[in-house]
Image 1 (cartoon, rainbow, N blue to C red):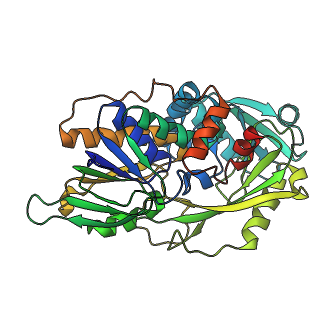
Image 2: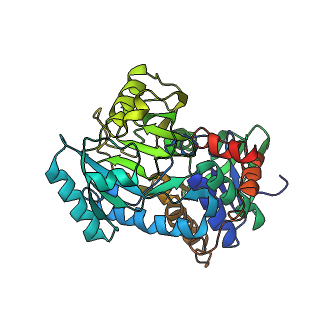
Image 3: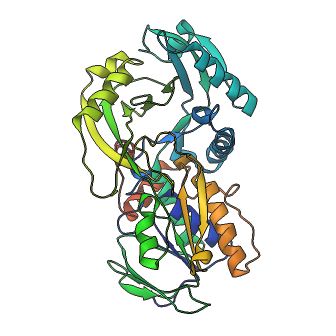
Length: 412
């Protein structure tokens, strides 16, 4: 590229692409770089749940409210990037009825639409649901196709003057000296192969945020954990299934066309690029999900993949990371002597747009740019035409494991 961008966004997952889009819509000169194809990190290796907020309702009401709000927004702006399936929280006969009642009450208090069902009513909505389901309640969960969502955000950023560079890894960051120090230069290799001098840098690399921070001589404090997803052949499920119990392995089933995604586990990792995987994770996820949907126990496996959660916990010392908040944080590194660097960490795929808005607000405040966010009301490009979306996915690096069956199938 011939000119230096005002803002360089590092990381081409949902949040990074969302930041690039948000800033571009505000008229900011922005460039996005990622070391691989877009969405190839955590975003495209998730289970693809569009959260209603019910999963967090009793433990994290503010986080649940964020999910509910963004769920509604994505249904308005994202078209074929999402799928409206609805969801069920199911209680098996051995599960705690008090926990079920507490979660249902918390959903109702927050404003999450929740309809209580007996076991037979639940089985009528979800063919194949276990006879061991004692009761359930309906919630407005759905499915996200992250490859499409990320590509649509990137395309809109470019449509509004931004630049997007997949396969362009950051190789080094130079920070200036003195009281006015900050990121002075960023060396980017790969397809871009350039040294950039942005006025501001956003580190949106998720589980890899510590690596970019280290290059700039600052700290973040990630506590990543891995989780397995297993996709198996299964037709006609309908709603997302959530086991209504304390979060545990194998408590979610996400429907696709002709497949369901089973997940997941939570195992701490120290390196988001280099970690072991274990057969027990697959076996446990299948076994536990089969308690809700028995047919998946013997269903042919289509593919399996692991993703790494971008959990932010600078004081984390324990091995159980399920209790770490799924909320997000925007870190201003000015106190560490790098006043033009921000890191956005934590969060969920469902809340990527809100994360991007909060980050863009901070960047614009730092740059004295008076422009408001438009991403909650402006529809993403191509979302009324799956074929157009999938062409964008191919343009930015191809489909990722979460939705490769849907995106590839649309091209057939």
